Amino acid sequence: MDSLDGLTYSRLEERLSAAGVNPVHAKPLFNRLHRKLLTGDLDEAETLPPPLRRWLASEEALPRCQLVPSAVTPSTDGYTHKYLLRLADGAEIESVLMGFPGRFTACLSTQVGCAMGCVFCATGQMGFSRHLRAGEIVGQAQYVARRLREMHGEPIRNIVLMGMGEPLHNFDPLMEALEILTDTRGLNIGPSRVAISTVGHVAGIYKLAEHPARYSLAVSLHGASDAERGALVPINQRWPLAELLKACRAYSERKRAKVFFAWTLIAGQNDSADHARRLGELLQGMNAHVNLIPLNPTEDFSGRPPDDASVRAFQQIVLDAGLPCTVRQRRGIDVAAGCGQLKSAGKRSSHGRNASCVR
Ligand code: SAH
Ligand code: SF4
Image (cartoon, rainbow, N blue to C red; front, side):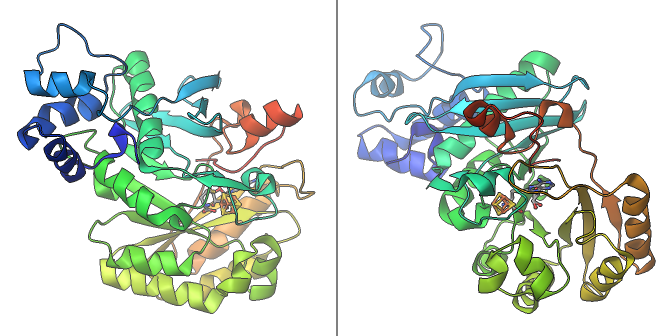
């Protein structure tokens, strides 16, 4: 069973009814959890309806999801903070606060490790431990939102699922968590300000296309042929490029939305003018935006990022093909704000190990 923070508003009402408490009390409780972001025990001074207060103090009330910080690393830009959070079973995940005043973003994890095994990614190199539950995804956003409120007195405006794990491999808990995080009675994040990044989980893309909420979709591409992509991203064997792009086109048409494509640039491997031209051809006619990410080197992968001139040249070719194309700033790279790195650094005592979540 999930924690109290992992219940959507309607499931919270059901839960209260089942416990014999009038479901109208869902409102103050949801407000307490997701808008006021209160932690821990009941405060005597809080004005909560007595039946709700009694239920919260009782044994049948669900426990809160406690995410305990085990490491915090601020970067020199003053705005990026990376948190290593410990879950109830001792597993550790990473969440990142990034952005700048007026536009702060929380980057959240969806799994402990990842099963997808992308060769350049520190999380992939760790392997898969388990899925996160809805409450554990919500708990990260609450944690980051509390820190942001303390530091800058601001709310979170954007959420990106670009932390550890493959979001569409953990579909239902993620959808529940996002329903909670976008609820206007709670943190109230606009659905279009939620970006789900997938390595190309085609079945998940079709499910997302049918889902009523309109979240933003980002697809990690990295290669313009099956041979090139398959060498970096093993899931390409299950869902080759043609199937992936068909799903992306279907998503874009169904939702009338732009699809974002991420391309991690690796020197000598996928950063040539020819690669850029073939990328432009692949996405022709699609409502697409390309994000280029120079590789963050990781311990178990020998690749290196290209120099700035090569990155700019690649970008220009994609732009000339008529596609919007931006280069991701590796903000926070000085705190290793890359998923998997903080955890790996602790575990393996590695140095300068950079990794995936580089937004
Ligand atoms: N599993 C999802 C989301 C998490 S990874 C996905 O793969 O899309 C978030 C992004 O970081 C992906 O675009 C991924 O390709 C990229 N990434 C992972 N490791 C990286 C690295 N070492 N350097 C640069 N980008 C990396
Ligand atoms: Fe998993 Fe994404 Fe890393 Fe691939 S890049 S291993 S899908 S987290």
